[in-house]
Image (cartoon, rainbow, N blue to C red):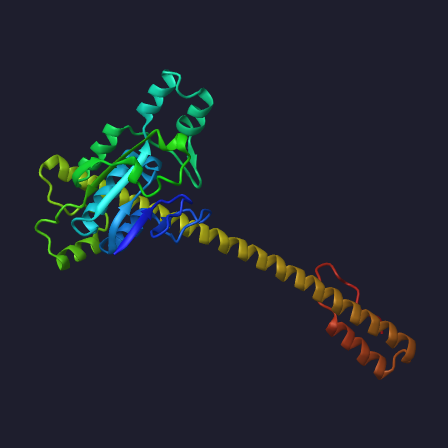
Length: 294
């Protein structure tokens, strides 16, 4: 089973499979987090998301955790960390941290390859885990997080973390569950307890599928743009080759005509034959009216 560091943002952990969607940062595997969990969920034995959830909207964060809860094996450990914005603001108000550190480390924090889109405190991160259907949700010990030794001390202090376990997939055997996932890879497969939670599951599934379709559309547009550029370059190259060919052919024909005038008698069959050859070698050009003299 895999120990997966999902959304590593360049923080590579030894003994973990470091997964990142941005090819500009260091990782072991480059993949969209939704695509990776949908495809490899059953192979995951432990999942750590570091600060990935902060780079997602709340709906997307919920959808990703629900997808994990539906694809990974029951009992799989899931954990995530985030900047505790409430604790950071309290420390700033108390004068424990200055304005520069507050802006750099909390208010305008940016990881390599991603921007922060949402903020959490300890309570909201726990609630996100609970809403996603994970069980045994609790506050994680910051000192035991896999990346605890990778961050500066001033950033490790103002973090919050939550952990939970993938819940049993009631009423779904393995084969049936695999077929459902193939058809709708982002649908949460745990049993909905209320109509509201069922609707949230469906909305999360639709949103995640829309994101996948947008990614495919953007990839197709990039490919189309490359094809258009190649077509333009091909036309330009062909025009250049045609111009070179006309230039060379014209010079050959013109040089032959000059030689024929010097060495062959005017009006002779040889002179007329040379003129016909020169005319044949001269590419037709718009506006040209002159032909090599006989």
